[in-house]
Structures are given as structure tokens and as C-alpha cells.
Length: 236
Ligand code: IPE
Ligand code: IPE
Ligand code: MG
Picture 1 (cartoon, helix red, strand yellow):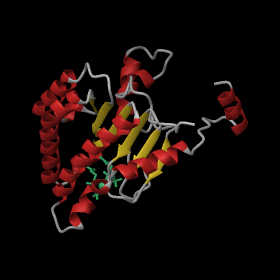
Picture 2 (cartoon, helix red, strand yellow):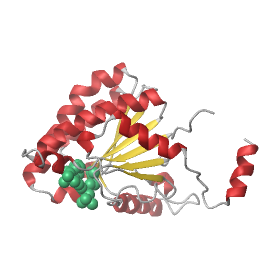
Picture 3 (tube, protein in one colour):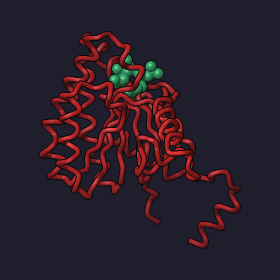
Picture 4 (tube, helix red, strand yellow):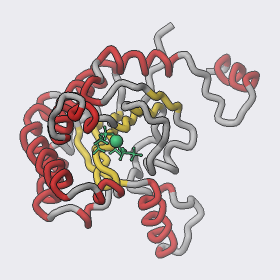
């Protein structure tokens, strides 16, 4: 039987700073190396037939880091976005950014919009960069928009910043911490979690494969009993 592949994998890319510091380097070197791993993962996810790959690049709380690190990170992201567009187009990757754009510089927002519109017609992997994002921010902004629309029946889900993107099937966190750090709090209600001590700049295809292998072995029950799930599978 073919292995079950998650439609949406999301990654909390943690450990860049420690990776750099353990080499006696500035934290920004870790962030730079981390971008290389995003590129590798995009390639691997495409090959595996994963439909959506989202990555947590910068949280709402990360704005409180030292100004130089924040500036360095934003510069790295802007540069990577510009550089990678041809490769994304070549590989049919649709690029999107999800997060609080009001907190980003107008120049970065313009770059994001350009990358999104240039790849809008791509039909391969959907790459989603979660930037200036937090789960609580998302639930708040969605709730406000929902209330403004008169609280329609369907609830807040269609108002979340990730609307149109399926909820993650698999959440991977590198760097050893076993926490969600204000990530997709609503969307990860039934995601499978995979934690690895590997620091993000060391995360290779074999590590990604190990996460997929772990996912394939799990039984998702969504609140039902094991017996009900077996029945559903028989009727598939
Ligand atoms: C993840 O790596 C990247 C961001 C949060 C921007 P960290 O920078 O958190 O690295 P550690 O956890 O300090 O090693
Ligand atoms: C989570 O990592 C955010 C990103 C990976 C972008 P943090 O390093 O900010 O999380 P904490 O502070 O260890 O919980
Ligand atoms: Mg960290």
C-alpha cells in the first residue's frame, strides 16, 4: 500500500540561533543557513507530492528580539524572496505570505505582493511563509471581521488569515522544544505533531522523511473510536 502523504505539512523552523552560536558565529548566520533548508524542503515536498508546505518564519513575539536581529532577518527574507522567484516559477511553486502585513515595511510588502502575483498561476506545491504571524493575532483579526459581517453561520474559519489553505495534517518542530509558541492555534486542532532535536539549519531530507514516516504510521481518529475509523476505511 502507498504511504499516506500529508496534504499540508507545516514547520516551526527553530534552532537557527543556537546553531550559529555553537559555531562561535552571530545568530544571523544561522538564519542565513536556515533559508537554504527552506529551499531543500520545497524541493523535497514537491517530489513527495505534498500539496502545501507552510513554514513559521517570524512570530509576532519575535518583533521583541534585538533590533539588529530583526532587521537582519527582514533583509534576509526580502533578498531571498527576490532571488528565488525564477526558481519558484521554474518549479511551478505558488508562493504566499500569511501574517500581519501592517507590521511589515511597505518595501517588503511590495516585494511579497510581486512574488505572490508572479506565482499566482503556478499549480505545483503551495509554499506559505508565515511572517509576523501568531495564532492569537489570527483568531482576533478573524473574530473582528466575522463580527463586522454580522456573525454568519459558518463561524470564524473563513476569516482566518489561512482561509483557503487546508489545516495542517502534520506539524514539525525542529530545535528540541516541544511547544507550539503561539503558532496556528485554531488550525492545528487535529494536526499530528512531530518534534525533533535537530536544529533547523541541520534539517536534511532524511529528517523530513523521518517525520513523514512517523506520520504514515499514525491513526487519526478526530474524536471517533478506532472501530469507527476502521469502518470508514473499509467503505473508502
Ligand atoms: C528560529 O530560530 C528562527 C526564528 C524564530 C526567527 P531561533 O532564532 O529561534 O533560534 P534559537 O531557538 O534561538 O536557537
Ligand atoms: C518560534 O520560535 C517562532 C519561529 C520559529 C518563527 P521561537 O524561538 O520564537 O519560540 P520560543 O521563544 O522558543 O517559544
Ligand atoms: Mg527559537
